[in-house]
Length: 364
Image 1: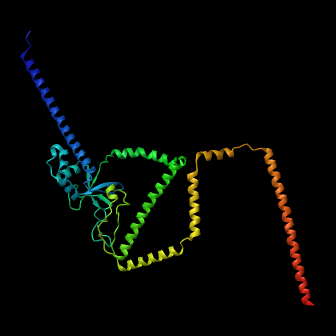
Image 2: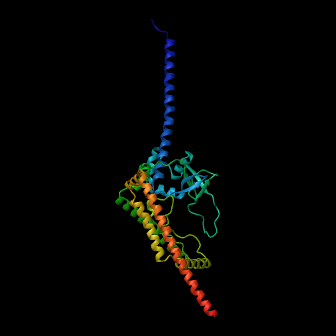
Image 3: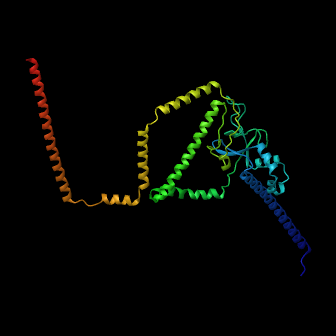
């Protein structure tokens, strides 16, 4: 039995329509996939750039939150010196630096900031290169390299060593709490190591402060050796950088230098005048050595032996004997006191009689 021709045409049209819808759906699915790939590539690009040490960045406070930011001109120089980072963007690797930064701003991976303090402080020739307080730039969220700052908005991935360090801190805390039960040799090693490190840090800070004060008073220069030694956020290389930064402030007035010179001389004289003598130093040293010896010589065996001595049973006969002995000793002490008091009375009476004889002789 033959099927009508109209039914075949309708079936063909329906199948062709379903094919076209499937192609349309596949095209619509491919488009967001490409967008997702682009988004992932820019996210990966931002993470790689942020982790790289070539892009100089600092930490600041913006709207009660700490953010990591960089300058626009530093980003341009970084991309010029590291063009291989554009390969991460795949299809968008031919974009210019400004276009890449604008895409990052559009994807909310960056935000343009501005300094909070826009006026010069007294004694300053120019504004701070790296301000400590920022605010969001309200006018235009576009890239610029002229006195423009950009902060990362996503959380930074923690490296492996930080993850391992987070597991190591509880172990270190437990080890510090168990210091009293260490062997004596281990206690000595820990004690002298910590004391040596502390002495080295304090000596470094003292020499650094003395050098700054001497150069400030004599030359009028502000020179801080190891300028990042007290920085909160710094790499290991920046932390131990020896040479100081260039002094950008105005030189101090000669009156202020003279005033602080007099103050320094007075403080030194007071310290020399009220310094402890040899006996006091020996007494302090003996006291500290006793405290250290108590800490080093303590052991669980001594603690347990002390507890056992305190928990020994008390014998009633021993208590009675001790009480009788103490009573007898008290009586003997009273007798001795009475005898000595009697002798003292006799001596005083003899002296009074002698004085009386002398007075009577003088009268006669």
